Amino acid sequence: MGKRVFAIGDVHGCADELRALIQKLPLTRDSLVVFLGDYIDRGPDSRGVVDTVLELHEYCEVVCLLGNHELMLREFLDGSDSKRVARFIYNGGSATLASYADHDGVFNMSPEHREFYEKLAYHHVEGEHLFVHAGLPTSPEEIDVAIHGEEMVWMRRRPGMPEPNYSKIIVHGHSAIYDVDIQPRRINVDTACVYGRSLTAIDLATHEIWGVERSTAPQPVYLRDVKDSRRHALRFTGAVPVIVMHEGKRLRFETINYSEIGLLMVPVDPKDVRVKAGTTISGTIGLVETATPFRGVVLRVDAGQRIAVKISVEQPGVAG
Image (tube, rainbow, N blue to C red):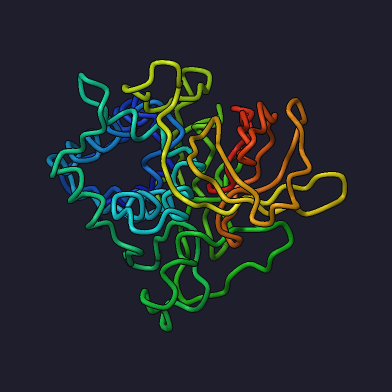
């Protein structure tokens, strides 16, 4: 009898649920656990999730794949592109930063954890299964991470999409669903724990499933601004594109600074200052291909055409 292979879906900072799920699994020294990516963001304890995954390495074989949220974290840590930094922040990244805050409230990630994020693989093949975070844009034989890597962590299953018919069975997460979706050539294990559902593992040989329901209601978590106690979340400086739909017109802005719950922006065209304090606005923030929808209220418009916006905290990001 060969080793038992288990796949675990998107954890998203739900460390308590991950520990409870691992306790349920019939693991032995010969077992293989494949994590499908998205260990971090949105949930309360991203650092605790990585600690748990690293501890599991000491008991059995573990393969850790890259998710789109870890890719965004890499871009944030690189810091060279303000638009990609914003993409991380507006997709639950502040919760991850908060989990790495030290006693003074300052972001402080250990070298061990930085190495963990840097070494995550895009995919893994085990027997008849190919494991990947989001999916495959082409056949396994044609995959080139340099070309297809972005799609492998970002592509999304849409209703009505044809099922893959590749030489390997694709095991993935990223597209949140209520229950594990088992198709002849594809298995989706992301059961949306961070959104109040459950964290799931599956035995790939028997299709036996284990799950742990979310133990607490989802709550927003932010890295506090230790220099300004008036702010609930640390603000980041940088020019990030903002599109606002207002009175049937598409208005373009750029941020001066931003957080998950607020931003200060200026119009690209000075004639686009058409919004007034108290106005509810909606639009998108960030790069076009992965822009995050938002809704908020204009708090003020100053003489310098700077517009302060309070973002609705319940507005979700687009990244799975």
